[in-house]
Amino acid sequence: MKKFIMAAVGGTLAAVVMTTQIAAPLLAQEADKKVNVYEQLDLFGDIFERIRAQYVEEVDEGDLIEAAINGMLTSLDPHSSYLSPDDANDMRVQTRGEFGGLGIEVTQEEGFVKVVSPIDGTPADEAGIEAGDFITHVDGESILGLALDGAVEMMRGPVGSEIIVTIVREGEPEPFDVSIIRDTIKLTAVRSRAEGQTVVLRVTTFNDQTTPNLEAKLAKEVEELGGIDNVNGFVIDLRNNPGGLLTQAIRVSDAFLEKGEIVSTRGRDPADGDRFNATPGDLAMGKPVVVLINGGSASASEIVAGALQDHRRAIVIGTKSFGKGSVQTVMPLRSNGAMRLTTARYYTPSGRSIQALGVSPDIIVEQPRRAPEAEDEAEDESISRQRRSESDLRGSLDNDSLTEDQIEQIKADREKAETAAKLREDDYQLAYAIDILKGLSALGPKE
Image 1 (cartoon, helix red, strand yellow):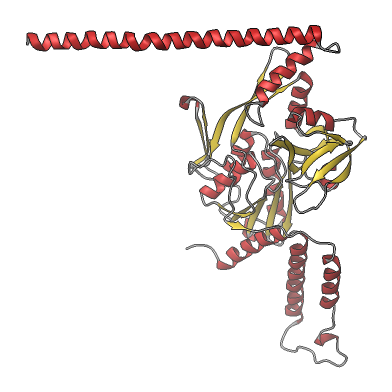
Image 2: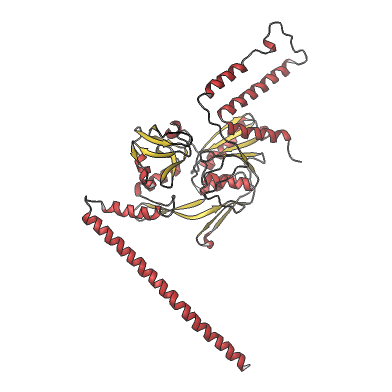
């Protein structure tokens, strides 16, 4: 027994000695780190004083500090940045749905400014800017190598003024210039229409208006079609939607889910993670849903597409999405500015991160580019469709097996088919989505 006690005491002493031996170097390392940080801060102070005193021209001290802060943040990732008081105010206004500018969402890729997507109905959209375009010059001045905020600042200007941006586009042999007139951007978060018995909900952004707009527009279209029994399904069009508020992405997903996880976020500390779950209630009342995405669908759009896809609540159609799977927190600063800092990654209900990978559609459908020569072909096709049929021939026999009502119904069905064919020319991806819903409707309800 004495031997056991002595062994135990010996073990305890050994543990104390070992802990002391290990802890001492760790404490020394921590102290060294602190000293090193203070030395680096002293170095920053020295450089700041040298610039202020000896730079060839007088500099604004406030601008120098802001540039240093922004450099520190932008070195982390493309989405962290410093917001000056004016920029912070612009961002608050933008989330409310109205702001001045061109109407494009941009990011930075290996030093190049890349268009995530143009916003529907904005000057950039109307000028033909496309998702995936690279902007190399603004009014003839190169923006290569500029920080993203600096490039964005160059694109800002008074409403009504002209800006010339130089675009590099995949598939185009040479860069080309695009003229855009700056305007006040009024975002309509959700647009809706009926295509036959399908309700199409075009969600352009995720701001404070998105969920209320979605609920109102959906109810209006269903009512105009004569009730939910006359609806064969819903298309949620998220193409070229650059994202926005995480809270709105969660609410839009929840609108079509009865239960289950919508999205989870995980930060540096696992204890800071969050999970967001759906609540009972499905706006679509169980009707089939198709989600349309493309390379301009980012962030909040990908949360919605990923959640509905993982729960098998929707068929996702289109092309791979942008792949922005991180969450930014905007933190107010004492200067009335703000810091936008990446604080977490988000994960779809199945636990997958879409960071850099994007959401992969269930059915890949490319939007065909219409070449100039296709215009002549389309005209020829239009002429061929207008060629005479048997009924146009003089003296042709009547169809006596059908009533007048049946003949009118056939004509109405033919007109619907021709409208669908026209939609395939205008928007092939949307037409494909609507055809999917028609097919599901034709199969009838599940027993």
